[in-house]
Length: 158
Figure 1 (tube, rainbow, N blue to C red):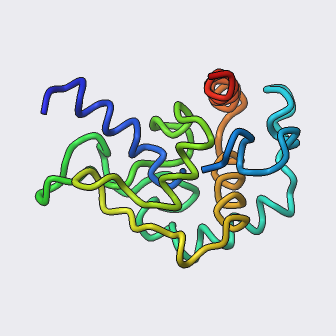
Figure 2 (figure 1 turned 45 degrees about the vertical axis):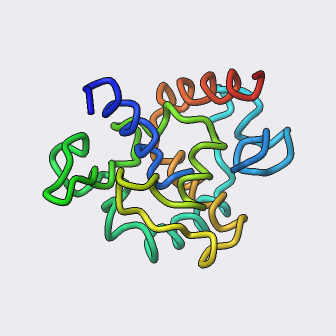
């Protein structure tokens, strides 16, 4: 696999935890409080807390405390040929994925042969997955959130 193909796969995986919200971020109404504008980077604290509890129960063992990751370079395949779980705190490519892609990765797991993330669709409710995404975004800096917001907005326009 060439570098550009590998990078494309990593970009998809970087959402690795994250991952279909139909057209609205996190499957909520099109007017989700987080989707209104990049300057409204104030996630609802109760959703962040619920998402953090779910993250700590199901995700922390692979993606690390506060989404910091557990490997030095998540872009290098392991001995099994899979990409390790990426950090989710805004230092990897998670913020370069629209909400629908992030939700899909959580729901369905890693694409075959790319990573080892399991599908969570039979374990977590749609709302639980959305709350995990809100928690993960709460870890991002405002510039990272603004980047994601623009990517997500353009994805919705297609």
